[in-house]
Image 1: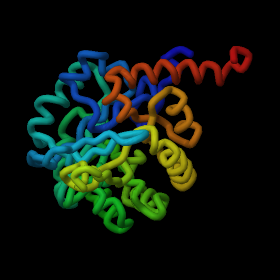
Image 2 (image 1 turned 90 degrees about the vertical axis):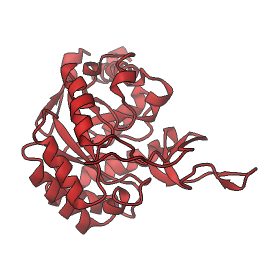
Image 3 (image 1 turned 90 degrees about the horizontal axis):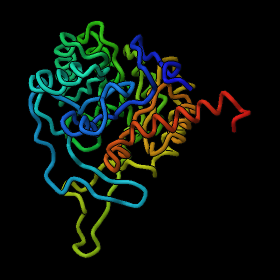
Length: 296
């Protein structure tokens, strides 16, 4: 299949293909040494707040069977630095950029969205689902009323920028949160973020992460992602960006069959820096075979 035929439209923004770099796993200085960011449909940048955040104390990452736990804590250098560096570098390179936003209050989410409305970021993603911060993150993303109110404020501040809301799987009914986000004005949804988890070192009898718990990602969470994307895509009528455990083109295709319009690659890129491009190639071949059964 020609890459020209893989164009997808997410909330009015044209992506040349459906593969996206997930937030927190792409860094321009490091990742651009391996591939051109414009080769992907979109780059989602690391979540950014108004002021710099230090993040959590180390150790922040631990391997586990079928994936990894992380408790980075959304460390970032603040919106001013982001606009002048990462965003500028990516736009100069010709990439489509989705800016991930985080805050400790609803007002901070709106303030960051307001700053981004003045930039050439293509989309805004509201990260209301990180399990590794004490204020904001998943504490906002589990209550429907809070979600709707937060999205409304950020959407108003973001001007004409499409707003994507990133959902947590750490809820009883993800469709309830999805509907609340759409009711609040969300143009699209992305899911799933990490599952809350913990490992304990049997020698020290202490958690392996300094923060105690962390977010589980990697291939172990793929079935959860497939199920929840299936649920959400049948519950709301907005574009869905799927993520969670995508390691191969076949995994990406599975999320698309579940209802995702585009697919973000995260943990795989931490293991193999060129994984997003490799997965794009594998997905292209699979879609070609799907359209031409005689070739299979």
